[in-house]
Image (cartoon, rainbow, N blue to C red; front, side, top):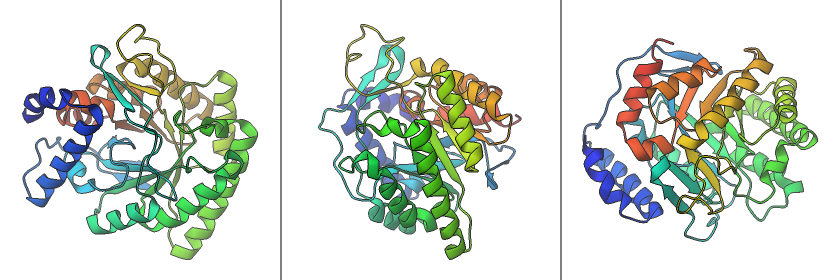
Length: 338
């Protein structure tokens, strides 16, 4: 596999530089119309959020923040692509270095801080791509917007991306934007979802198309918080939940080099925590609202375990960095008959 040859070279580089080079390579491959390196097998389509997904395996937000590489990523065989997180205005994110590998545990720590070119630039990129598959757009708030005005940013983003999205994800769970996770608190979440769902309904009338909304939550939740989120999802008729974002815990990576860096931990050590929250939320929702399982999927068995815990779809990110495109094929094979 080509990626197995390229990975040692990429891992010799600064992680963010390697990330940028990988995206550039995918863009070049599509421009030159090179064949996809790894096409997954045919799979049974899945109906989720009123959309038809060609397979159950998607790309999580964060890899392509600006929607600049949609076609190249889609060629890897994903059933859906989620881009972002995007904010209303461009912002540089947190200072570098802000991305760290922990290869001994197949993990990543990031404190990127929603670095992106803004919602207008993302919308223009999506238009240029002309992608016809399932495209999720993940939205957040600018770092300099006070938390009490967060809804203004989410509404501004929703208006800018609505026409371009198959579904929109409301990201309130990144640990790298100050106070963002406060929006998961019961009263804050109730107000935010009320504002966003009302705006979505108005946009549906305007555009003649109802775009589903998903909520992305953290893994660092207790039982009471999981219950309050389940109640809010029902109350506001949110179309799906994405479970979960990265964790602030360092369980499983203690004393490893770079383990004390601030930011969210992803990869293999996140799997049990994220899957536990997924299962807990699935039990409380009883199948009323579909769930998308993400966090620590490093092989096909992990992907299937997310579905067994209650998810209808699975997303990958850190596993792709460590395994390359072969992981997509393996995950589709493991989930195609579910």
